[in-house]
Length: 112
Image (cartoon, rainbow, N blue to C red; front, side, top):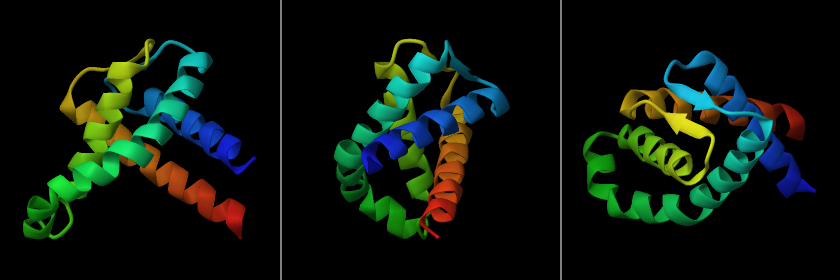
């Protein structure tokens, strides 16, 4: 049940990002749900490896490089999911930032 809530939350956050951030394109609600599932898998499997590999950059930038890692994971999701496209790095960066903020806010409000 919790996994389904996370998938729906990620899908909703991706829909909001597609609406707000220029350069993030979404074909429809099915693509958003699939992107939510894939983004969850990418965050669970690929993101820890990327964080470990980029640890020196993250330490040098005092943690700000994590935003780039999030953008890479968001772009990887867009590359995998048909109907979910990005126009470039900055679209991935701001889209990932918005999805992270929305997911964090909704998760925090649901757990309290």
